[in-house]
Image (cartoon, rainbow, N blue to C red; front, side, top):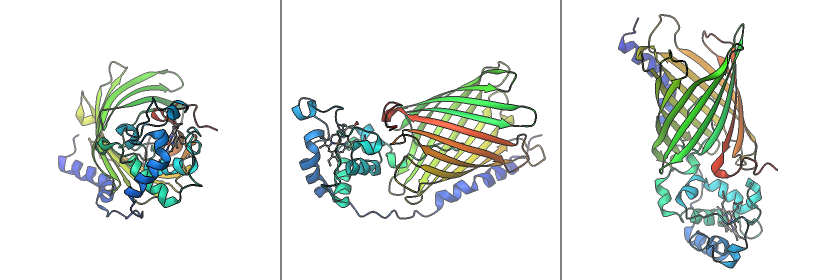
Length: 368
Ligand code: HEC
């Protein structure tokens, strides 16, 4: 039986409230003295330009540059310049490339420049790709949660495994996800889903989708994206699904990141049997060093469109840990336990996800 539209709307709203509350909370100030760009330019020209070129674009004909291996980064490339958070660049300039798994050819300035000078020169380096203002900034690329959808577009390969324990049999679900950026603010995604319930082990679904950043605000540290994914089950009898979602991310201060997403799962054959899914997560980023362990707490609510009269909203809580594996954490692992808070058909779900941000280099870079 269909729930009256008004009750359904009320239930959807109730589940979405935590996310909405976060949207309207006032921005907490992120304390940072304003960088001096003119001082930064002078430092750049005297210290960095020899390798990176005065415009940020290394001159391949220059003998100093020719002798370098690897070649210096092209700081004038808007995609490259925008995707790297200034904080990571401060680490690289302070401690040298190897601090984040890059080459030691990028020299440490810890003896030559003080903290403020480094902040100035990095702020100036950030201005060297004028077009980068139309790309979402890497400051808004938050940690990958287990259930909540991310807002930031990625060049990433993610392996996800989920073990569902239910009385009788355990079910494994493995997902290979390939995400590739296109345009200034968009990303395409392909997912292949494999399931093994002890009797059958097969590819059960392929998903294809695209995501685009709708809005961001670097001063408020917030980002909002919209996406559409289409799921094609391999079982001919199962319905294809259209899955639109919104994903929001917000940094409350330097340490607390909040992300939330709202998805609709719409079976093409019978939309009424679909559901809405809300998820929200808080990560505690206690250090700027990426190769550390970070805790997070996530909640999800699944709201079926059809009210079966019972306690139909399914709530879960997902405590989880993120492990930065390489020096720059372009390879990272998350482990989590998804615990039902309402009457659900399973006991616990164990999650593992391994991500490789391939724009930051080979999988094997930066482990030592
Ligand atoms: C001796 C040459 C040299 C000098 C001097 C130098 N760099 Fe670099 N820089 C490099 C090289 C080489 C790389 C690429 C490292 C890699 O890809 O492994 C690099 C990479 C970088 C990156 C990219 C980091 C990333 O996340 O990929 C930034 C930012 C940077 N340099 C900024 C600076 C600034 C600012 C200065 C001046 C304070 C400076 N560099 C001075 C050679 C140099």
